[in-house]
Length: 470
Image (cartoon, rainbow, N blue to C red; front, side):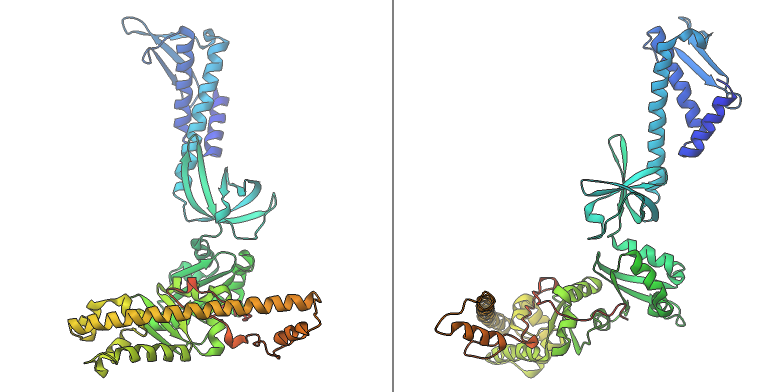
């Protein structure tokens, strides 16, 4: 050993981020292993080794039967012990490096860094990050995004874990915190905590809604995030490959927050039922498609952002639901107007709601007697079954009608005209004339309202998504 060896150790310690003393100790243990191999010894205390950290001089000692140590010439060990020392040294260096990587990246979970795309393995993208590799599972990638070897990849460190003899660094571009970190990088007010991101809902690759608020009345939270002429938000959208981002103004009032979250749709009224954790939203007929969004995306993200199940109704549907509920309850003796008003204030607007909230709410909040509450719940449950059956029948009829219209359209396109003029009749059906029912208009779009917006079946609307929406 000499000064050149010490310089090599210093270089390894610097490049691999490993403690210098730890590497010297590894070398000492490797030499002890070589000596034990040479003398066929099983006693771990028989040999000792010391390397001078300044000069690199090495000394190796062996203990005799009386416990006295005498120095052994290093050159006398031979080739096989030298190979043993080499293998032990390499193994311990790798273990030290693995421990160093694990310690370093464990502290950086949640941090955004830039790496280089290397290759794909079974759908997972392997990314070179600094002095190691991370992998991005398919579930953490943005749908439709493809990288080529050498491409720059900006990603979030989601998780670091030990997997056998390897350290696995899980990267993500679909995690909501990835967008949060991008905002911190692009918007100084967010990184300085003047603007706070209160809530976030994301469907990676498609759309994200973010609720923001400012602790400084002079700073407009939405305007600061958008930037001058959209400069700040444009950089984030470009990084995400065109994903739409709606910036929503946060409000402590759930009603106002829900109205903001459903933009660009204009909300007429918001009715909250705290017992069910559900918000009933009233929107005009021409705003229904905007409020729901393509394939229910807008209402689904709004529900996640606000933490409320959202049910969207038109004024006509809302009035019909209230009329049905009132008609059922009015048949019960002893019902007063004030009870109906209290039920409306609680957000109980349909016979289905009465069945869900239960008898205790009717007794404690509405002021009904125990017998009356039981009677109201029973009557509404029976009526709810009838309404559900009616809605199911209407849905089946609608599906049947659509199937017939599609079959008629196929017949016309295939040129399958018959002598009796059925093809002409089919064409009339498509064009809106003839004896067959006309094709539904935009106002006839069927929306199945229930629970959160996630289960709604929506005819894809052709709305113009305004991004960002404030």
